[in-house]
Image 1 (cartoon, helix red, strand yellow):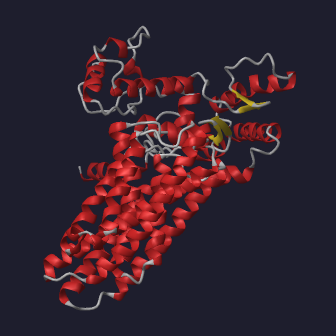
Image 2 (cartoon, rainbow, N blue to C red; image 1 turned 30 degrees about the vertical axis):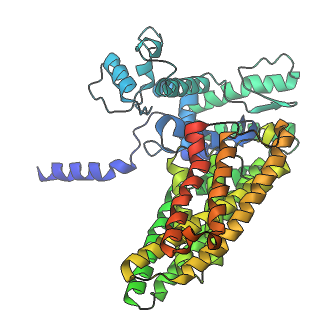
Amino acid sequence: MKSIRYIIFIFFALTPFLVFAQRTLSKKAAKEFGKIAIYYNNRISTINTFSIDFTQKITGKHTYNNLNAVQIFSGWLFFPQEWENEPMIKLKNKVIRSKLNHIAGSKNKNVNLKFTDFFYPEGTYRLPYLNVELTDKAAIEADEKINLILSVINGEILKIFPHKNNWLSITDNLQDVKTNDTVFIANVMPLLMEELYNENEETAIEIINKIIKFQIIKTNGEVNETKTNVEILYNNLNRTDIAYKIALFFAVIGLLNLLISNIRGSKQNKFIHIIILVVAVCITLWLSAMLAARVYLTGHLPLSNGYETMIFAAWLSVLITLVLRAKEFLFVGGLLISGIAMLVSYISGLNPMMTSLVPVLQSPLLTIHVSLIMLAYCLLAFIALNSMIALILKFVTGNFNTQFEILSCKMLLIAVLLMGCGIFVGAIWANNSWGRYWGWDPKEVWALITFIIYGLALYGNNIQFFKRPAVFHTYLLLAFGSVLMTYLGVNIFLGGIHSY
């Protein structure tokens, strides 16, 4: 009996390290397979990148059962019959999930779904027969997941063969391809699959290397080892989920330390200050590396979508933190703002995928416009934080520190100037792109509202209403709501031509 207990204990102790998923590549083979270039998202990417996006889309995570993303993708690609009953398809909608589980005969209503759950035994697709609106977001999401898996199974999405100005998959028509290339394209994947089925790993890796060599030759070096390694390194280091937790944890500790020291009238803990400085420097370097990698891989500054601008805002915030490190509260507050920006980029559903620019964004004015606006927004976030701290200290100590008001006024002047310049450059860009300077688009309207709101506070000395510190700080704190509406709310609730 005692020995059985030991066996049970060892089994559960080792469970996290065991792999229960279906057949796939070894980590060694998957590492090499991930280096193959693929035309994806209108740019030359890597299978490593596509695999991460594929796994995230299907499971909601980057890994599954101790398998990395490339192993999961290659499992579906080479051994689909062994993966179709794997409960790994995550659906948030309980109604669709419950109906599919009921039809499939599953008693557990909370488990992830299997690929086979979406089909009747004779092969008919179940989703259209669930009495749900197929135009609903949840139904569209489910349908996209299944179609993505199907495109992997049939190889349609695997555009890994460069030809002239196009990329081909094994399912494409090869009539216009040269004879030698046709033979290679038509036979290399079946040959690779055969070696994998026979578990000839070393031979399979040799075939993978031949595919990579073919890509390098046919793209005249556009596919190269350096770019591949940078992209894979970026994928491995792109851990916003960890970075925002570190930033927020130390920022909160720093703010509590400062508040306590100000209330007691004592000096702040220098050890905590040094730790936060080290954390801020490390996050600055990490964000700089991430942004630089995106520039190198995409060929444009990372300012083209919500995810990129949010990460850019996090980078600007932590940079301002280092510049204002003499201002104790703003030094720590900048780290807090940076952490919040990274948190929003992680949990808000913003798309982290790297893509090529749409034509309307292919303008040098984009960089100037977005940079000015984002820097203004970051300064306005600092102003809101500065006002919040001033109000908290007034509540605790009974007095307003005039330094907070002076600092807010200085930053406000710069922020309003930057915002005005950003709107002006945006108008020129709009005229070049759409043939008009101003079109009353929701984003334009709210940018103007925000500019007016902060413009009123800028001339607070001439308005009796703003001469009271409590009113001034409360106004600036509440005014930040217009920034949030302009940057996030418009995209969520109103849309418009500024949504890409």
